[in-house]
Length: 474
Ligand code: AMP
Ligand code: ZN
Image 1 (cartoon, rainbow, N blue to C red):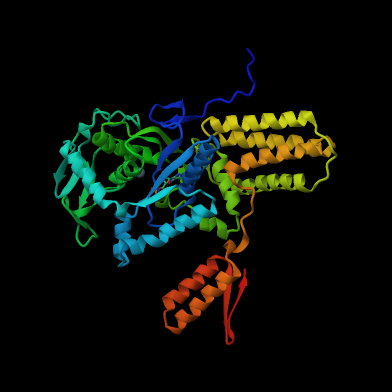
Image 2: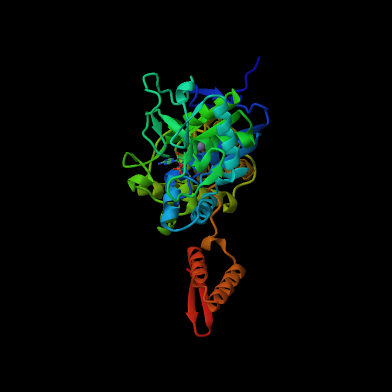
């Protein structure tokens, strides 16, 4: 029997639930049903958040490369403690307060070329389903009511702790928590339905006037669109406990079936050994970095260059190095397109190319080892650049090299430069300027200022002259 030296290994992922690498195929063999905990839209997301979302993008692209279809759902958390507090302070409805941040999230993820999940769903549009799920839990004896709020009794769910692998046997039961953020390693009965406090926005429901807890959102939306058992559930590592543990407790108590087959968690983006976090004030938004002149592709490159289960330390030197590496790859691509090579095919180089493609795929199959995959591409570029200098790289070797780059870029997606000025067309600029002039005439200065800001963000500078508005690109 002859073994092929490049027999593809199985696609395998590290599953937080089993704490092991496991071979992956979707349960129906075709479509991966996947859920991602989305952003809480109370502010701009930071690049730590975007690291986790970038990992999900790489995961999506590699699953598709492996021939699977995707049904990927992401929630938008648009009701939560901080949102309520900020909206009330600013005298806005929840929707008025969250809409700009939701739009900004989509802009940021677009700039980083993150594919949109097949479905993005808002928590506030699923209140009815959440109430029904809580009533289902009530029927099964998993809830109790205290001071108008409904809580989940975790001592009734025997497997509590199976995802985070924390032993909760010594915890005293009955202690409650009803804020959306709480201490690590402290298992307490969590709130499913939170009774309304003074003046808070609330929904009138059979559970009383109030709003859903954070955890029930994800269970309900995941199961509504993906069924009782998902193929993959993803999120940042900080969500593993308590959020994901609580999602399991809710969903499995309701369905009696495993909630997700694979749990994949991305490690943190760090700054000087601390997690990048809003609360620590050590964060950068994508907008901060773009304003400093960094390319979105270089930021994407940096975020995905370290395998998702390793911490990634953010530094400006690291970001500059990412930009330089990217430049090197682009120069190589240009060289393939513009240099003159002698006719013929160098069989040895063809063999190196085939091996590099296979090794790239193996690295990605190995729990998305992006660092190794990148290393393979670099080694290939180094070797073939040397061969080009020595006149050994021949015309017939071009398509193979280009295919390898295309394979790389189908996942990394960094080779194409982003159009300048955020790609707004002249015609769109003119339309917005006309709208601004009309708004000013109607003394709608909020709208006219808004349009100026929108244009400014896209690098368009306006100058009001006595002959009308002049504009230029920055
Ligand atoms: P949040 O909006 O706070 O729920 O966070 C959105 C996503 O970003 C979640 O999956 C978090 O786990 C993730 N996240 C938060 N901080 C970081 C960080 N410093 N590095 C990587 N991911 C993070
Ligand atoms: Zn969630």
